[in-house]
Image (cartoon, rainbow, N blue to C red; front, side, top):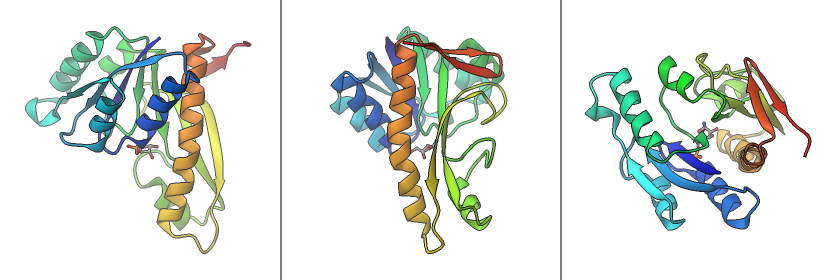
Length: 201
Ligand code: GRF
């Protein structure tokens, strides 16, 4: 299976996915990585792993719609089976999301439906939560609202700093995102409306 990954920055989740493809854990290949921001570490990670690295700056497009159209064209030129959002910090148009229906995944750093949007770790800490985590979900038109495939939980301890919580969640992201992508590439994972299904091996 061929995978296109969209990023905006560091790309540590991208790295986990690249490593899982290299080791054979994911039966797939990251054919291209696209960033809306220039000079980010994630693009270097892509090149290092032998993937094609594209930068498509959103500032070059007058509207969200025109950017998403260009993005869609670039993605489709690689004919991917799966499109993976890994820290891609842009809201996508409904047309874009519909075009990739059933083959667009995202990872979100909270236990959805809690804490949709930004600053999730800070919000969980401020709310006094003792359990936090991350979610892999299919992307639908509703922001951070698509069907959840898998969630990982981590504790928040009273003495925790923000960085500790962030790191703890990240570690889990690196394990659940490759696992979900593995399932998808095995042809076992399906989206039906607002539900996600995993078939037996
Ligand atoms: C991750 O925390 C992910 O949950 C969120 O953006 C962050 C991306 O980090 N969507 P990285 O670029 O993969 O290091």
